[in-house]
Structures are given as C-alpha cells and as structure tokens.
Image (cartoon, rainbow, N blue to C red):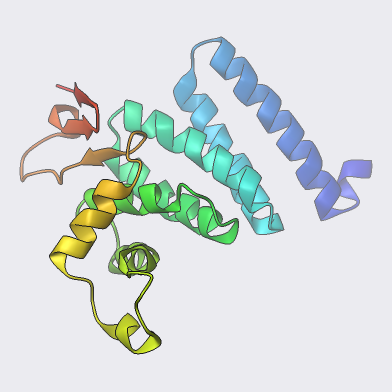
Length: 182
C-alpha cells in the first residue's frame, strides 16, 4: 500500500523487484529475459535523470542483443544508450555513436544518425580550429584519423542486411576479433 502512495516509491519497488528477477534469470542462463528487464529498469532510471545507471543497464541490454546478433533490437536501444552517455559525458559515447552508424541506414532513423554524427563532429575538429572553422564538415581523412584513434575494442560493427539475407547470417566484426554468426 505504501508503494502505491507515490510514483517514486512505486518505481523504487519496481526497480528492486525487476533487478531481482533479472538476477534470477541470469543465474538460470536466461540472458535474453534479463536483458529485457535491464532495459525496463534503464527506461525508469533515464526518466528520473539517473543517466549513469541507465547507461549501464542499456549497455548490458545492448551487449546481449549484440551477442545474439539482433541488429534491429540493438538499433532500437543504442539511441537511448547514446542519450544517457551524452548526459553523463561518458567516454564511451563515441564508440556507441560509431556502433549506431555502422548498423546502416535501414535500421537507424535519420534523426538518430544525425545525432550520432553530431556527437562525433567535435572529435574530428583539431584543437587549433577556430569558431569559424566548426561549420566546415570534416574531411574523410579527419574522420578516419579520429576513428582510428578511438578505442573500438568494445564496439562491434555490423553491416546492413542485404535483401533476402537473415540476421543470423550477418557477419559481426570486432576490432581485434572477428565473430561470424551463421
């Protein structure tokens, strides 16, 4: 009864119970269900402004979607992860943006692609750039140099699906490792 008296108390109880259920699912090797519950918790945390915790939960969810080769679900959650990382000034924001852009135009909305590109733009500017130079798009070499300088060890780059190709035959590349799901 007390938990229904306020939205915050209800959310606290919901987060507690959902996190407990997710832990039980993980213990039972039901990682997909645990990931789904992580996303539910992350949505509440993000709405409360607890971006760091929300980002951790979205990251956990995205890791499972990536391991399971579910690019559509990944494309659905990466924008939320990116927003949380932006709010808490996370060092992993660029990697998330690169991962989102690598999913292809058919999976990521134009608005989310634009946000990811805008998040990468400051990284492509040289420290000597003046305010007048910031409106100039980066050259291909600047983007390549920036991407090479980033730690992409945790980012899996997915190519877009070809017509008639299933997600299960998608090749998933990881810097330092190659994982093929067939």
